[in-house]
Structure formats: structure tokens, C-alpha cells
Image 1 (cartoon, rainbow, N blue to C red):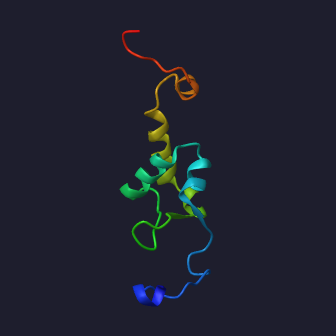
Image 2: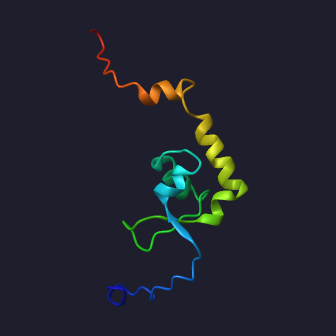
Length: 96
């Protein structure tokens, strides 16, 4: 498949230790959507082998200053009652 798509051969040592975007989002406690947003903006250095493939993030990048600032901005945008907001399972219908 790599030959057909013109991709180079897989070299596990070329990139260092990589983790998925979901695992990268778990460490600082943000959602996968927020982590993907940081990756698209270029704050979180994540890559895809091809469109639609899994995002991979270098483990070392999670400790960088730019990523920490981006995560702090994501957390700052959360509602003030974030914990209650997350676990509120009651469906509220307007007018009832």
C-alpha cells in the first residue's frame, strides 16, 4: 500500500516515541477535539501520514512551553462550573 501511495518505508526510529492524539489529550486533561484544534493551529506538533489517518504526537512535545500555554488557554475557556457541567445528565427542555 505504501508503494502504491508513494509513501516511504516505515522506519520506527525516524520519529522517536509517538502517541495518539487521544492519549496526548488525556495527559493535560483536555478533550480530543481541543487537542485536534491545537494541532491544526500548529501549537501541538501532530502529524498524519495521510488525510484521514490517525494523528500522532511526539511525547517530548507535550512538555514544551507553547503546548502548555495552548492547554492553559483551552482550560481558561471552560465554563466556571465545568465539573458540574460535565456530569449534569439531566435533559433540560425549555418551557417545561
